[in-house]
Image 1: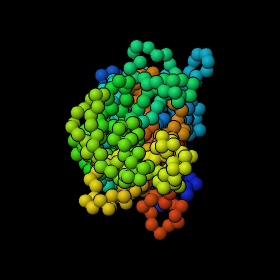
Image 2 (image 1 turned 45 degrees about the vertical axis):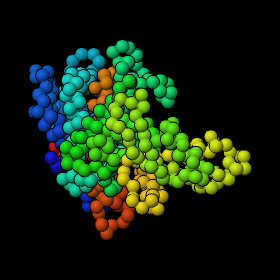
Image 3 (image 1 turned 180 degrees about the vertical axis):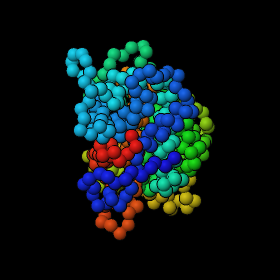
Length: 443
């Protein structure tokens, strides 16, 4: 399902924007919602009301794509649509106090009721369908390859409401929240292919529950969508025996940083600082009593690297001079772990390990994605976890639209380098507003 191209009716387009087609992402969102509604019919009805179900989806699509608060987005869309369909006229005045006017789209309270009445299973299916549609579209447009690697990380959506038995299981304590210690902890997956990166999975990590089933389910979905996963990359919170052994049993390699807590890692770092160990060593991780998945012994490789700008010889000299203790020196050594196969020739292990560390350094892309989806839209005040998860997925929907539009700019050739960067997030959202205002899109 490819999005349709919007005619360039907007004013003040940049030269590079005239060379790249702008897709109708609002119509694309409506197609995804309507297709899902046909496959999973909604039991509640809005018949008899002033607005149809399409009006609600249109308002929600505009709020998602312009990254505005719900009230501001609906009021702006109502103004644009009325001026477009009734030029020179004034909205019909309704009776009552305070003064009210007839609307073309629902207002905020009606939209909140519509989203609230969506079934929990429908919201979960829509989250999955959003990522499926984008991955399929990116493949059809040739913007990503079938062989990808996946980044996994966690993000928090802070909670400021009352903690009660109904929502306590969905919340996680943290000391990083601004003015609160509670938040919902979300795990997100991002696929990376060349210079294109897209969010492709989202799940709520609940307190006391293993993260392995959610990660494996997301990886299985990507494979069922036609992707071949080169490896999965995660940080120290992801790198544990349960995740690595379960992914390897599924046939997926893992690369990530690891904590210094396992005794095998501590022993390797001490030998590395003493000069008796190498920077890349083969280790065996054993399942501990706290592990929930026993897949046997895990054969993996540990890669050790000092801080940037330092060499292991510098740390050894400081330890010998007594200016640095061994315990403090261990804090300056970063440990990485991988389940990939090492070269047969051990002389190539050091260069192979450094190459994997450089590949791991691209993990910042998913953290940048988290910051981007929070730059414009304010935090949702949804109390229900399913609704909150759906709105976070909508933020990722807008991010993926922006990334696909930028990927089209990177395909330009024989143009200034600045033209291949693509639009900023602010510019992308403003073009969506211009399309609605001038009637260039189908909404």
